[in-house]
Length: 282
Image (cartoon, rainbow, N blue to C red; front, top):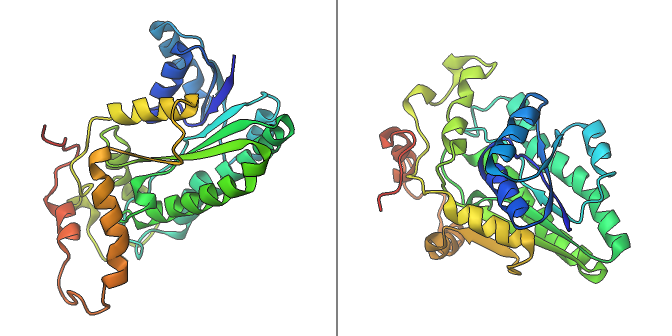
């Protein structure tokens, strides 16, 4: 059986995709950030009727990363990540550093060792769970988007660098899906160690600025990409947002520094108008 390591399986996309890959017959190593999540996930897998090898793997911990090198990973799904909501001008330095350590530096260091094992075998698959925010931006998610833009650069470069060695690289780019992740991003300000009087915005009045989709399409696509059933490099969900995403990638080429100066952008105002956990109307 092909051995798959998925990081960040305590909740959200990683949790469900680990279950689905196990149901497909893959040998799944489902990793979680902290020890308290290990037994919980084992019980959930048992109730689901699947077998998971559940491991504690904090991608920012060097010891945990070294431990993973003994697992014989053939497919790596870099799913673990955190989201820090807030203005690029307000988020404290410690929170910025944690965002990049968890979303970029830790996963990349984990991947370096595992990818070299794949090179020796002459085959393997690496899936980076990026985001639509790796291609576009929204107000108050700029630091998170920056970390995902970094993942895009790493994944695209890695695909070129590993091509001759027979190792595949792909990205999955979820848009706004209702898993709780996006709404948690807009609560992190409550633990900032800063001077609230210096903030540009009152975060108690803000919410994630978009309505969110049912996550089923991401579960299906991530599972298919990890299983090798889809060979596209970039896999954005929902597919209904692909054209909007491509259009917004062109907007900065036409933007002027004086556009709308002195006024609040509609995108930013939507954070004031939106209610948390708003589903996309079907």
